[in-house]
Amino acid sequence: MTFAKPLAVIGSSALALTFALAAPAIAQQMPQGAPSAEQQVAQLDQLVDLDAGQEQELIALLTDGQERLQSLQAEAQTVQMQIHEQIGPGYDESAIRRDAERLGQLTGDMTAESALMQARIQDTLSQEQRDELERLAQEQEQQMRQMQEQMQQQPQQ
Image 1 (tube, rainbow, N blue to C red):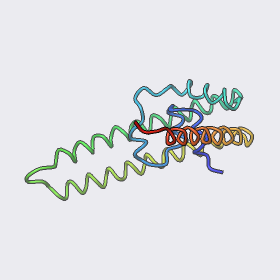
Image 2 (image 1 turned 60 degrees about the horizontal axis):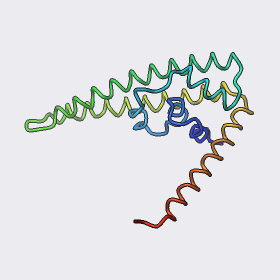
Image 3 (image 1 turned 60 degrees about the vertical axis):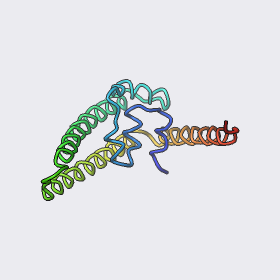
């Protein structure tokens, strides 16, 4: 069973990103106005009925993980700007390659942090809760497919 799918149910919250970050680029696009950890956990609680201990643990996991991801994201943006500033006549290839390597490392770190957060969150949930998220995700995936099919069947104007 994959665990990334259930997050589609939660919407565009940072919790969805937490579970679903499969590519480093997604981490770099995390919205600035993401809901708080408390809001995300409340949303998840509505879906799978968390107990008080789970809520506290998830809030702590999300808060800590989001702080680490934001720090990595900020550093990655700085390195991207450094690379961009080096483009032009008289460029320094070794500096560009060094910065590009650092950017790759940061991107990998963001992916690892996201995967670890996903694993920790999954570990916090019971099997029944994970099963319910999977069911909801499959339901939403089916609805999305139906919407896409309907849009493709509409005559083009």
